[in-house]
Image (cartoon, rainbow, N blue to C red):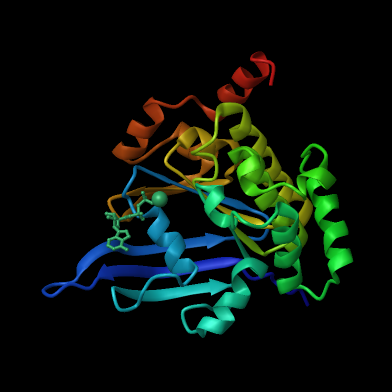
Length: 277
Ligand SMILES: Nc1ncnc2c1ncn2[C@@H]1O[C@H](COP(=O)(O)OP(=O)(O)O)[C@@H](O)[C@H]1O
Ligand SMILES: [Mg+2]
């Protein structure tokens, strides 16, 4: 008998309305998404199209008094919409990793990187302080971060945005979440750091089998990593396809518009090679 692995993420008819004194206002039209183990699903769309809202709904972070959320969100077959706040808190970090646009917000300014790394590992695992520290240093080394032991003693403000994002990925390397939600992870970074972060995300996927929901307003970023792409506009998914199909045969007018300003993924990789990447 073969046992079929469930999808890591299944979003069905996710519908979000803003509660108002009068008619509720639709912010997200019913959205459907599936993500298989070890795959990367990109969500692309202009600012305000509902990408972050979709992430917040998956993470159960929307305030039910302000937002009316319906539909189902399943993580490895388990319904998240029915989970208690305590259960969700355990799932966030351990089973769903998160990387946001501004990595500084993910860290507390008054504690060292090492203290926060070790604390996060210990919160979600049964590791001793010493074991957690060893794992942290090993993960920072794998992320190609220079002098990991001294980096552990630094404070967040002493690291660049790109380095902080890579520390975030290193934490995920240790916790091995089934799903990583990366919402505009490279938007605040320069091109060199952008590439490095995307490369490390790719390693997280190949080495740990983590599925990634990669959100960006930039189709160029998405095309570097995603297997499949959903295009969002004004609170709805207007097109969803395999990344190469999307580039070669875009169906929706808005997708074509996004493509006009972006090179083809294959050609883009060649361009990077030519530029000495
Ligand atoms: N907490 C909120 N209250 C009211 N409206 C919101 C809230 N969060 C997002 N929105 C609205 O929902 C829409 C989608 O926002 P968002 O998901 O943040 O877009 P983006 O695609 O840029 O991530 C926007 O029109 C935004 O104004
Ligand atoms: Mg956003």
